[in-house]
Length: 139
Image (cartoon, rainbow, N blue to C red; front, side, top):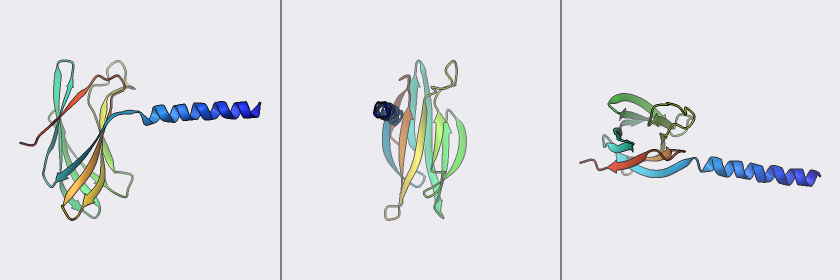
């Protein structure tokens, strides 16, 4: 009886972790030089919104980020060896399903001192597949 209970628990735990690990629909690696913008066009329905960010200063392990989504500007400071390594941008209003709002998570992974580039990972969470992203060139 205990063996069956343990097997059931393990199967359920693995199924839960597998579904949790697949939360992100898309993962993209990005490298940016100082003041180089990354621009992403967010599309859903007939709506298009622009998300862009850049970094301006790296000192004492902290990276100063300026971001703009749909012309709303803000600033973050991200650290490599700290809990504050990322920021989240909700791509749609919460609406009828506030627990399934698509978002982008931008995580600061590394600073390359030789090339003076910051390395990021962008994670797209879109459980209902409502959003399409178009990565634009900085030209």
